[in-house]
Image (cartoon, rainbow, N blue to C red):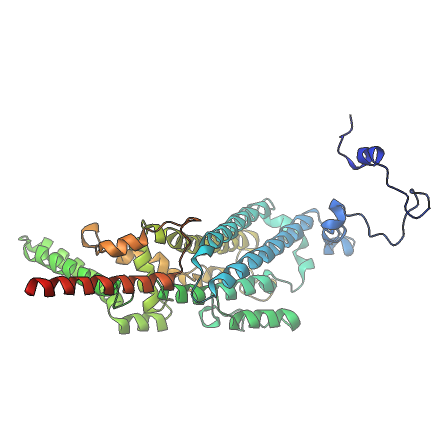
Length: 423
């Protein structure tokens, strides 16, 4: 039985009226082509784009078809990731960031991460080829290389990787294989504010950092000093000399660790060396959100930071899988594009290619619950404002200003009470 809602059935039930006096079955040459699944997706171009070089040379190698398909799919997904990331960067670029966009930002970041998980799985599809299968058509690749994927370079730049972090490719700049519009896109992505830049600026404006408000950093510093004093007292009370020496060394390491974040000059030196990425103020904001993540206002910001780490992790796993696949397929041979192959890929699996490394290291500076600065009741109340149609969201800057205003009002009230008591 045919579908009652199919085009044929509907045409039979409701004949097209003849408005021009001609037979209704006569095709109008000026009428646009009917939109179909195939022409909507341009499948004639998409499916016809898999052209095997081995076949053109009269020696078709079966597995080259898979090799081309997988890499074409990679490029399509890279395009989608860039599309999603550009929308996120646009929302983060406003000053202040509209907090009502945080759910949408997290949704699109989650989508990017799901795509990256698919890309990880594609590596395993390529691994269904043996090294012998790959070597059968490798000679037809010429000097082409995955290093020439300009979309992946644009993606890296838009995330926040800068040229100084990169490992040199065949002792040349990573851009030397790109030309024309592709090179222009890569260079433009270097100039635009990256995700790292925008996240840094957003974190620097986190409510609670203001010195005349909650002043989180002063409270955090006091808590660290108190914790270190307690640790020092514990060490002094240890009677066994061997145990005391071990505890003393642990204390010195702990103190040195926290000094690296409390002392701005030390932090800036680490940042100059590339060991840290975020500004000192942004790192304060990240810690603030991390400590008070259970407050309603910080639910989505904390989730966003987690999604950024997830993306970094997935990219590092993808690099690692790519490296192992290359070693499996070509061993220590040079890459087709002139790189050192496996050796080059191995150099990219390190923290120098991890954009949000500071977020991974936040737990280094977490305090035991007893030492986490307690939120004043008025601040906790402000951070507990739910998002609802009746209670519109407020952006980070407005929330920060609200903190200041409320604290000033409370201060005036306390002063008035003291004056009345004195009188």
